[in-house]
Length: 248
Image (cartoon, rainbow, N blue to C red; front, top):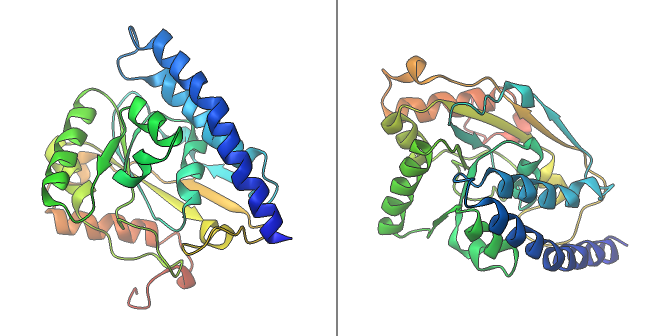
């Protein structure tokens, strides 16, 4: 039954993407001349992505702390990364940001085309020049008043345990003097583990938006200290089984 349910879900995702992409293009065509940040296009994308949790009884999603997000100041959003589902789920916060995502996602028909339309930021893993370009684009994006969304682990955890954070997001925060906004995800690795595309039955998913960390509170830190600090903040909201064995 799980295999059949999964086939229905992925078929719905494919067909709905074909239907939603023209809506995104129309939104872009109408609003882009006056909406330089593409705020309205991103909101349509939030709606599009949220369809897959709203209409999926196997993935009930709860969002806590959404009101903690102040959209008047651009920030660096960071979250733990457990599953492919994380990308869909994070749109449920319905706040403005630009994704930093691996370049392969931009090649997915309709979904990837919409990512380019939104001016999300592509990254080629293992390519130093791509990392440098990504950092520059993030700096420009933040200067234009857009928040950026990143998974500091770099890739999904195969075990469901939070791994060590890479420093890129925190280098950007320090260089641009931007606040950091941690977000905690739970339940997505149970809903859809890293390896495979079969939905794993009903698993509640939660998003917890933690307090924003203002630049002034970490301006004295170096990038390694800030990386460790933010990771510890997120780790403090996770169960022991969701952390690497070396974590205290």
